[in-house]
Amino acid sequence: MPKNITEAFDLGGLKVRLVFSDGTNSTVDVGDYIRRHPHPQYNKYLDPKKFRTFTLDGGNIVWGRNWDLRPNIEGETVVTVQAERDYQKQVSRQDDN
Image (cartoon, rainbow, N blue to C red; front, side, top):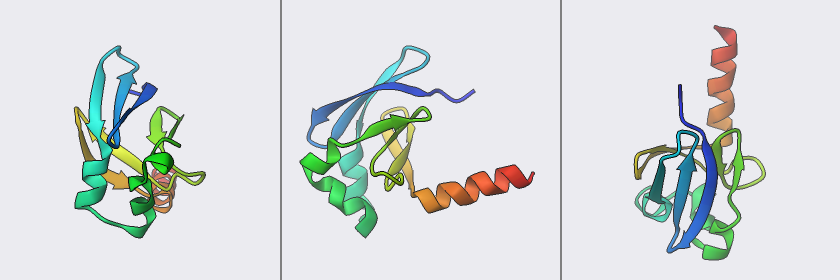
């Protein structure tokens, strides 16, 4: 069963501390991922004021009303970032099965 994020704290420097449903926590440098994988949809979150606008939704940390940025996190590393349209395709495929 995947772990849900239950709390998230802005640590500055485009880093967040995440608390998971199993009680573990992790510090993740989301800014590092965005800088290494530039994309117009994500780059705006390199601005610390915009970065701080994250919310928790469905056990995920997300940025933007339409989930502009939703990182897939393993341990202390962002392994991929999934845009809302990609997420909707994935959900649609799962619903078809």
